[in-house]
Image 1 (spheres, one colour):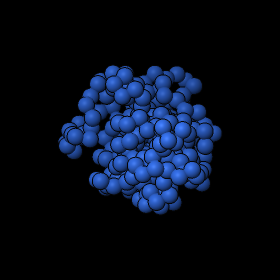
Image 2 (image 1 turned 120 degrees about the vertical axis):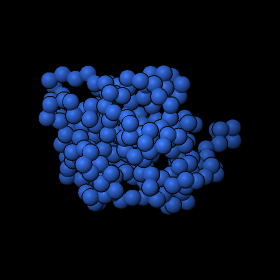
Image 3 (image 1 turned 135 degrees about the horizontal axis):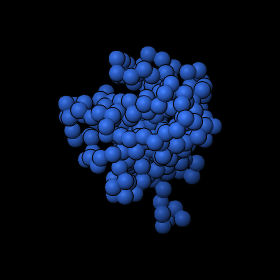
Image 4 (image 1 turned 90 degrees about the horizontal axis):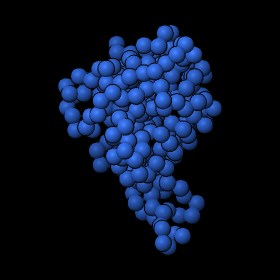
Length: 221
C-alpha cells in the first residue's frame, strides 16, 4: 500500500515511517506549542478582553508564516487532510481535561461554514478536530445549532478593519429551552483578530444564561 499510496508527513511532506502517523517525529518536536491551557490569562484569552465574557480560551500552536503550523493548517483547510484535525483533537483533549473551568462544558460548537462554501471545499475543516475533542472530553459535538447567514470570501486576505466589521448578524441560531444555561465550547482552526469567533459567541449569547469558552488549533501572532 505504501508503494502505491505513500503516506507523507503533513508538515514537511517527507515519507512517514511505519510507527508515525499524520506528522513525522521531527515535525512533532518542532510544533510551536503555546501551552495556553496552563495559563488562564493567556494570549488567546486576552484577545477577547472587553469583547466577550469567556470562561476559558486557548490555542494549541502558534501560527507563523512559512512555519509548520501554517503548513499543517493549509493541508487541513485546502488539501483535504482532515487527519490533521484528528491529530490535534487527540493531542489537546488530554490537556483540556486538566482545565477546571471546562469541567461543565455541555457541547462543542464549530464555527460554521456557509453551505456554498461547504460544497466548494467538501467539508468543514474543524469537523474532525471538534469530533475528536468531543470524544476525548466525552461531551456532544453539535454542528446544527449555529449557521452562517451569508456567503463570504476567505477572511485571511482581509485587512483588520474589514474583519472587525463582522457582526453577530453574520451568523444565525436555532435554539430551544433545552439550550438555556449550557456551557458551549466554540472551536475554530486559526484565531487572527478574533472577529469571527466574537460574532459566533455573541450569537450564542442570545441564548439565556449560557457560558462560552473558545479553543482553536492555532494562534496567529
